[in-house]
Amino acid sequence: MCVPLESEVRVVRELVSRGYNAEREAVTLLSGAPDPQRAIERTVEAVPEDAPTVTADHVRSAVDDGAGVSDGTSVSDGAPTSDNTQTSSGGPSETKGVNTPEEPGANTPADPSPGSPGEPGTRTASESDARTHDEPGTRTPSDGDAREIAIAGDITGESTGTGEYSDFVSVFRDRYERLAGQLRGRVNHRPTDTLERMSGGQEAAIVGMVNDIRSTANGHWLVELEDTNGTFPTLITKNRELAGVVDELVLDEVVAIEGTLADDSGILFADSIHFPDVPRTYSPSTADRHVQAALISDVHVGSQEFVGEAWDRFTEWLHTAEADPIEYLLIAGDMVEGVGVYPGQDEELDIVDIYDQYEAFSEHLKQVPGDIEVVMIPGNHDAVRLAEPQPAFDEELRSIMSAHDATITGNPSTVTIEGVDILMYHGVSLDEVIAELPAAKASYDEPHRAMYQLLKKRHVAPQYGGKLRVAPEDHDYLSIDEVPDIFHTGHVHKLGYGTYHNVLAVNSGCWQAQTDFQKRNNIQPDFGLAAIVDLDTLDVTIRKFV
Ligand code: D5M
Ligand code: FE
Ligand code: ZN
Image 1: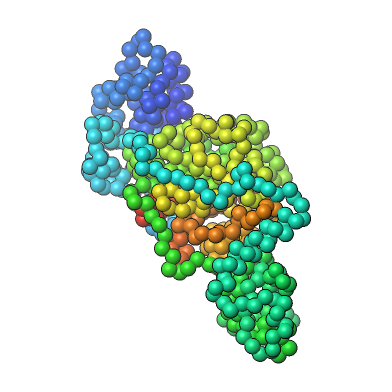
Image 2: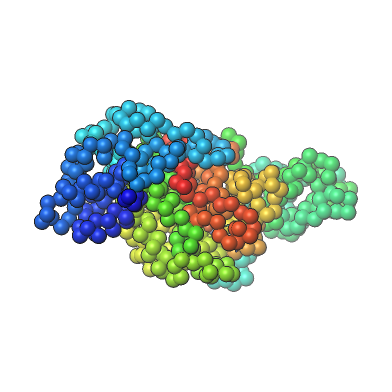
């Protein structure tokens, strides 16, 4: 029985073992064939004895002769056929919708019959040409003419921080100014130092950073706000509806509290709390044409738990006609497993040298079709400074990962693709938001709800300190100045998505099976999944590759 081939790397290895070199396009065609093993056999038979290199033409002629190889109807002898996949090469299953998929891959996939134009999973008839007629299963490379990509809010090359105390003061001042600016027009606020001079019983409002949250002996809440003039206490009484909002507050975020001053003007009794937030009526921008982006993160190459087979299936699928609309691949950090990230991590390393890990990652990235535009930001396992904002990979790492000519930018960054603003952030703060907030508002099972909180607070790292390190810079790169159309994070290794005030939030899963740490903590990671986003509608489809 032959071994199923699931990636270009394996196609290349197979050809090399038979003494052939191959043109890149030939490898792409072979790995995208419904049955790559059989396509290789046919091709090798068709290559003239004196030709050392397998060309794309060789593959095409072999595939033409070999009935059942290219039409997507054959079932390969070696490849396992799964009950809910639609092609013999092990195509992924899908779910579609705008809520958290309860069970990704549970939906019935499209009918596998080839050649019926317009049906899901089949290339549209209007675009068919001689080549697609011959090879309905293979990706047609896009020429990239319609592509537009721009980056904003990237720290790379702009870092001014020297680590001095004054830098921390300026980054906090800037955080306050940016977020307070979003709130000032909405309330009739007063500076904290003027409030105690006002006469008691008056209505007043404060725009401030949350400096302290404490419960009183009577079960009320004391929330101290700080502005550039000083601090002022507010009281949120337990029997008010407002008390339900207190559990959403975290230290260092900026809010406005409106209320009534006590008789002695020493405290403000809160009537309402305002977050910088995203307007409810926000109307996201979309692309002018049907084009898709695949959103992933946390590849963790170098870990013993890296799921290479799922990755191979994913990249193989990207070579099929079904993935034709995918012109962008966004990777939100943790390309590699890194070294020394957590105590005991070395025991689970497959590749112990960080540069070797990036070499291996680069090989995996080469499996992605060359016409797909790749965008990458770093995460906490990557070889850049840990403190956020994190700059993009340096020259040495870029040269290792140069094969794909990816757009390499900092964490966080706003990447504008065909008019759609995508805020990419790795997501270390999500751990903190999930730890601080009640499960109904943020949990590992619904990571997108934790993302909603970041949008509401208009800051990707609202709470300073804890595990998350913030680098002192002259301005705050972590505040969300402009509302994004899509917010993409990773880090928690759980897949979840949904919309918050019309902004699409997607937390991608990972490509790493359960680690010892996760086993001990009973965490079930979502691995081998890709979120495919239609940039013209912001619809999401989850594809499963395990
Ligand atoms: O993060 C993956 C997820 O698992 C994220 O929620 C942090 C958590 N995690 C994983 N390992 C540890 C250890 N050893 N301590 C604390 N938290 C951990 P990632 O960035 O991929 O490690
Ligand atoms: Fe990770
Ligand atoms: Zn991470």
